Amino acid sequence: MGVREAELDGGQVDGVSELKVTSAACEAAGISHWENDKEVDNLRIGYVKPQIVSWSPRITVLHNFLSTEECDFLRAIAKPRLQTSTVVDAKTGKGIESKVRTSTGMFLSSEEKKYPMVQIIEKRISVYSQVPVENGELIQVLRYGKNRYYKLHHDYFSDTFNLKSGGQRIATMLMYLSDTVEGGETYFPMAGSGNCSCGGKVVEGLSVKPFKGDAVLFWSMGLDGQSDPKSLHSACEVVSGEKWSATKWMRQRTIS
Ligand SMILES: O=C(O)CCC(=O)C(=O)O
Image (cartoon, rainbow, N blue to C red; front, side, top):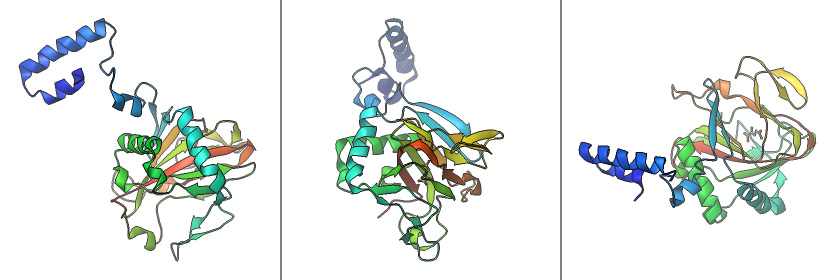
């Protein structure tokens, strides 16, 4: 049992103060409290750095969220199965091709979700977002070549068809799988108070530049429990190179 676990398990005041002494001794000796703790590796503790970039809408950048190996693994699974991306038709709730979204993409299968590396990523997403794994849609991997984009949209549904299983989308974890790209930022026009760069243009709002391994967690639902119109966002046009990303949409309830 690690020192920290013992602190949490032991309810007695005396025991806790003794353990604090042990913990201070470990620190003085330069020994990590978490040595040999697999969970620490799986969560990339010590690598991931959360940076809150906006409270309204709620957006957090999680630097170094994925390892290089994890990014390359997701891309390798996706590459042979990429197809033209679709958007949700507001009337029918079905996926349709549209000029609003010009990437190619694919969803991991429920079998691929069981791969050990994917399970670790799924768990990490749920820990950092505090949304259970069961509420997550399957991970989608996307590729944007030169001049490809996804125009301004919300991730929450406007149709009722998609609400049936799992309810509304509440949050999105967007993970960047490549960084040899110019443009391709994720742009939030209703966040921030200054200017930012989007696909080679200077625009009002806030944008997140895609760096391999970084992730951006943003909330489609506000603290009032209502869909947040300020979560409006887009994938800016890729000016040169290619952008790869992986998206996890999270719902209010378990998806059956
Ligand atoms: O790729 C991006 O930067 C944004 C993607 C996006 O908007 C989405 O998947 O909902």
